[in-house]
Each structure stands twice: as structure tokens, then as C-alpha cells.
Image 1 (cartoon, rainbow over the protein chains, first blue to last red):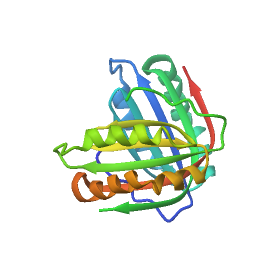
Image 2 (image 1 turned 60 degrees about the horizontal axis):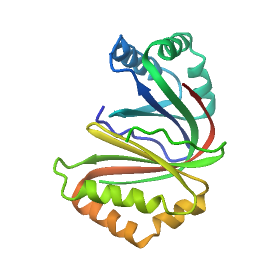
Image 3 (image 1 turned 135 degrees about the horizontal axis):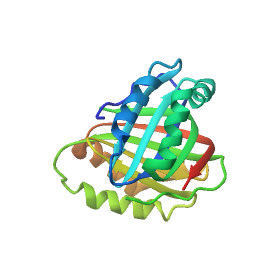
Image 4 (image 1 turned 30 degrees about the vertical axis):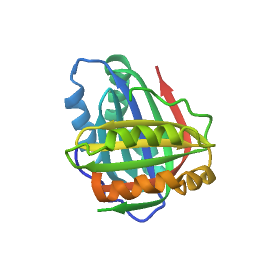
Length: 106
Length: 106
């Protein structure tokens, strides 16, 4: 993705997902797109920014903690997380953070 | 970079730097490495995770807000920020966030 997310005035939330993937795709790309599509329909979802070299970093932005908790509990998402742990990721780390201030230059 | 950062038990801070760069390097890589080296000597710096496709995402982790403010005010860093705005970046956005919880799988 090459898009910056337009987020509201802080505070809002960021979920920082850092991952190390296996080389092969094994259905990963298709599922990743499906999950972004699904997340974007969830209340409180503000957008997602993503980049991967060897390490992948995906930051999704959310209105509040409640939205993050609901998305984590979504059944299709739980299933994707399970496949992710078994099939796609060597390792991942998730950090839930409250954005306190932001600024941009362009 | 392909390294995960080992961060302490939350709370700690994340600076999420999202950027769109020009195509040419123009001294960018050298300066980026220099800034990471310099930041790593600052008190409170915990590490940095980075990936770039079209969009670049760099997340640096810090012990507290004071460390972030001191790093922002570092003279060599201020100079690099100025060159960055003038020479390397089409656009960037910085978000300062307090990490409230985290978990990892590996």
C-alpha cells in the first residue's frame, strides 16, 4: 500500500503489527487483503499503513479500544490469526498504543 | 532491518514515522544510518523497526516522553529533519503513541 491514512485529531489508537513471514505466500496475500476489507467495515476502523522488506510492519488505526477488542474477537479474524500462527509467520509482535499527538509535512 | 526490537513491559512509547520518499537516494541512506546510530546512544532509546515499499514505516521505541522530546531537540537530528523536508521526503507523518499492552508469538 502506498496510501497515508487520514486520521482524526488525537487521541486515537494504533495497533503496530511487526512480523517475520515465511518465504512462500501460501494464501497469505489473499487472506491479508480479505482481512483489510473486513476490518474496514468494522466500526471505529480508521485505516491501515503497511510495508514489508524482510520485516513487515502493519499499523492499523482505530477510534477507540473498544473497536480494537471487537475486531480481535471477530470470528473470521480469529480464524485468520490461527492460520497465520500455523502457516505464515515465523514470529510476530503486536503492540496496542494510544496516539497522543501527531503532525505531518507535505 | 530484519530485527525485532525487544521492548520492556508496557507502558513505553512508540514514534510511528510514515513517509513517502523521492526515488533517488541523495545521501538519504547514509544519513538514516547515522541517525539510528545517534539515536541509539540517547538515553531512553529502546530500538527501531523499519520497512519500506512505496510507503516507508519506521517505528522507534522509547522509554518515556522525555527521551522523545530530547531526541527531537538534538542538533544533528534537527539538521537531518531539515534536509529531510527539503530533499528526501514528498510527505511524512509522525505519530507519538503510548504503548499500553503487547504480546508476541514465535
